[in-house]
Image (cartoon, rainbow, N blue to C red; front, top):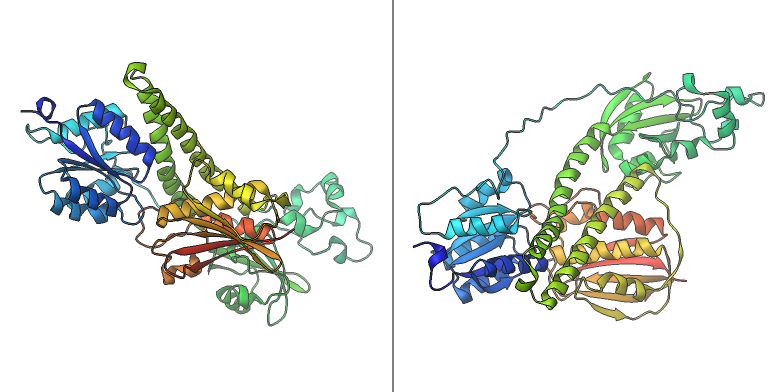
Length: 512
């Protein structure tokens, strides 16, 4: 007897941290003759629901806060040994399906597949006929063997550049416009017109847009930093303030510069907080120029960014596609209230996509040195309300009613990232507290989860970093963007463990 002809419908528990996707799956399953008896938003809640309901079918997401699907799966299998367990994930099938099947799953589907194909696959897995493949082509694509060849392109040295703090300080009083080369442009391509245009622009202003890091060091034992452009600041984790000894910004780079300082055209690899780079030294009459080419490491970062961002985008896209599919089922199958909820889901998921793309754009602006901030008086309560409305269930506590000096769009972005981070890795209840701290107003985003592991806290706000072992990985950009935006607004961001557990992320901005 097949699952389609059962007198009593199969009882189903859906475990997924995205409420919008749970609703779509419930609609599809009920339409297909199944009975959804419980829903859960994380692995622990899923275990509780399975223990309580003893279902015949469990749809289990892999990437969830509190407890992920792979961690919950063995317990669910023990609680319901005869149930069919189908895992869902935005990760590639070749990466995760084998692990899920080995942990006790009966099947695997990727988010983004059509609801009809998911329903057909569920019917196939729950049928009592001969067992079939756990990877129907309509749901999980056939694995491809992608061979990724490792290669290192020849790294050309940086273009010959005249990099002085003041163009008039080199070449003597008689140096005319023709003697001043445009910074960052090969001498052979510098025109008289370009020299005239650049005559009122400092070399460092021009080099701020360079695609490689440039540091000017005083030629002395401490190698004090005279100037560092935007990319160099990123690679040195923003510790390259003028006057700072190079050793305080990077001990390894300082030691290598000291070792090679007398070598002609010295070049070497160096590991920095912001990534690995090839350093090339050039000398002037009184200073040492260090060029940092991070192209090799940037390619690795780009690959990781593409992979994690693709996963983050797949969830909202799957929801939006699913809603579009349900709209084709016909007016008679859906109540007006349900249609309104689905339309609200589209808006919510579109905002999530906008948040992801905003972080990608901001990260690109940070790396290129083109980030712009429009400071003005902002009411923190208004900013909080604009972020939490229709997205987050958050308690708001206002202890200081002062306005802050901030860019309203950037403040919204920072709050959205911190609240999204709290919901992804923390646990309810969630709270935003606005309090005073001298001439600053602090916005605390508080959750009740496990907190950040101690060994990870010093890397928490770096680009493309994630705690080891987390499945809900995110893009790795959110906290890095928050920190950079806070500093660009003359503020700061910090993390402290909660007094009774959980995490407290704090944005501190100057009060008006």
